[in-house]
Length: 229
Image (cartoon, rainbow, N blue to C red; front, side, top):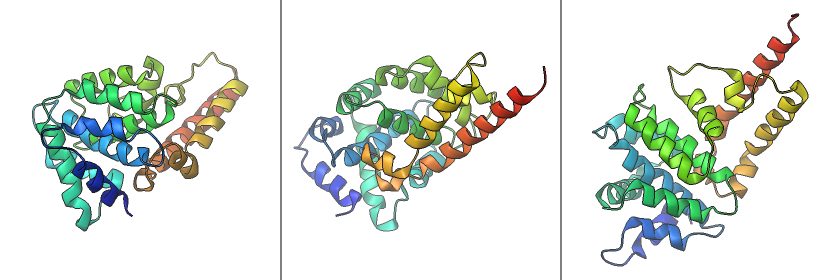
């Protein structure tokens, strides 16, 4: 059964009048957390798409880039998007329920926020309202300012591409310690590791950009620290 068929089943299980956010309380264990992950990105993305006052076609299209939505599955993705837009519950309620769903591990929450950043910059701009939205979601997820800025640096077009910020390290850290953090980031970006923590196969290609960014940051840090003082 495809993930979109499982999403359809999860939505069908909602009783009349139940909000979309109820699915996060029902899909808290593997393997169904991959269904909840997909719903969470689309639902929070729908909430964020209104943060700057309008829903743009390019932001909706960005979902297809994250999830490789086949033509026959577009109706289900659109249904999730519209249910989230119509739900009176605020995005903070959604974020808290998602946080509870992944209370045993933080890595999927970082993956999810990464997908939201991808959607936020899909139109080539990063609106202050989107920044506020993502900062608040990150805080609810339990991500600190360093983790948030690492993502922001990688995705926002006008952000200073500081390699230390990309890896979430500081320039005064020993190179060996930075190397350990870089290696851990590479391991955590492996597709098998991502699927194991609840990221659906359809969204795993988010790790491709992550690997490019963190490897480039590591190369730049190595080069800068090898230069004579």
